[in-house]
Image (cartoon, rainbow over all chains, first blue to last red):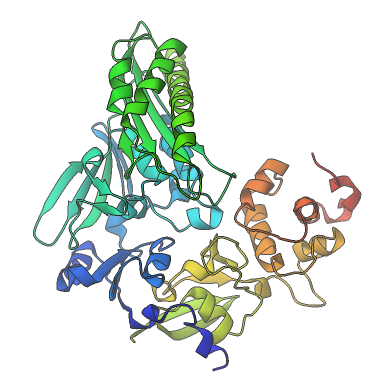
Length: 312
Length: 170
């Protein structure tokens, strides 16, 4: 057929792929168990397709997760909110509960790539890719997310803060699949935010990104804070120094400025295509201050909703 | 090399295909189905020239494994209008002068179709956001935005649609 000779002009690696098409999670895990080191799971594939073609990832077998209902769900219960890993970024953005309670996560999902990417890329894929710049990963870190991993033999749940080990790597084993992402129960008088700094408004990896989460007490002091950083270290990571600086402090601009300075202890920036390490050191305190300020504002406004007869 | 069988509805026609497991949706559309209106611009999902509507959603077909698409539905530029019977969006692009070399145009038109399907009266900000995955090296985007606003008018109230009312920014 005319033109087929050009089909693989850019990657002969693609000729060697074999797809599995499981219809249940159990089936998917069986496929994965056959030759885990040579097998990758794929949902949207917006990142993985390129990684395989450009030989950054070795894969002979692909397990298609996009037709498995057990992985595509949203559950909101008293104990917390649970996301299925194959929810796309667009689906996160359209979710009313997430928009109300976790606008930082929705903002992060909305800053990824482009509409075309967001209609295919998934939250599980973002975590599994373990990019230091993964926007959803940064937001989820700030929200205290936990990830459940399953293989044929076992299941385990780990805090996302312990999941990433380096650029593109994490503690998940080759035979494991991310099966759910859990957010703790929503706390009253809490707010979150996400800021992505980049050279343009779409189709960019962040120069730097910060996600913040705060819970305020009745005197508007910080009861709990989480600050997560992206593109500022080999992995998305929490800034425990910024968080410590906020403990018991009033939710004031002074406190946020202090926290911003404290965050510098937790970054490990590099010079790359997008920015220099020096520039990243310059912007980190600014972004942390802004993210905290927005999160506190969010906490106050959600609290106001509550006082208006509990309308949410 | 292994293959997968998929059943794909493309521009209203059902196709039963045996695709190679490494093949992209873009390859299926251009090479197997002859739909060369779908362009390969960058091959990395960053320009939007390959944009099509898959199961109602705008996607970059150069990043999608065809093997995953059994049971899916695709609309390409060829599914919108034909010479002599253009879709109002295509007419709007012509009237607004939003086409120079034309290479980004099919992707731009599909993005516009997707946008107007869910938001029939978008603001300029909403237009630019919705089309942010489509790059154009020729036009500087101004006339493309005007074309989208004109297209929105044409679809809402064809008799009153007027180019002069969409010129310039909001």
